[in-house]
Image 1: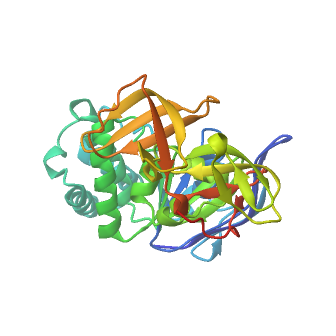
Image 2: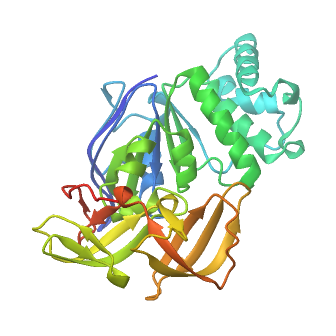
Length: 357
């Protein structure tokens, strides 16, 4: 395992800059996930680490060695792609060991490494099959096995689960977490799925428009986001944002609801509230009327999706059988201690005094 460090790294295609003066430390042995919307630059960044894209500016170091101009094979990395890219005419064993054979290792060493990787991935019984006879999850395991046999310093994953169905993605997330625990390898993983990021990562890097918005543990990003973008991107369903007006130490919301804020704050603000902190039919003096449009039933949990009188969408978590139906208007209260305030630019306001219940 090795540390990966990017210092003021940029990537340009002509006059278009897609990565901008980016700084990132990937600790040795960590599982770091790059997450963000399509087009934010996360896959480009991964490909630069792999050596599949040139670096326009800045420095890439792998295990303390400058790697900007190293050939991909000399970087000590192995990449697992979204497309499994298996050779259809080869068996699983030959697919996994192909790179070793090309590198000139003797047959016994190749077979030993292939069986060791297959044992780690629990696909020993598939070694004589061909890709056409494998499920999507099995093919992905073969692709990962092909990376394991190279004994890389760093594993790179580019949205490896996006071609799998929902149920298989869940089981493969568990398998990847177990693999990381077993190998204790450095892993840099790209996804647009924030649930994947929250499940797998030691550290999440949230990107937007070629820049890093915030870096931290899943818990840190969920409970203490720096801005509206991170707050809305991390969490499912996403955070609710209510428009307010700040003046003289109070934020004024609809229906006469007010919240304390710094006395220096004035003008438009956003009030962020997670769905689990909103309560249907709370019965408190300050409540917001919400018209319910849809109810998502997930067994022990229900999510109520609705809108305020001004058409602002809201999501509410309801853990009991509330008897609420679509089309109904209900009063919703919220956990004041969990409210987050954001200024007009979207930046988090952390200096607000605790909000009383």
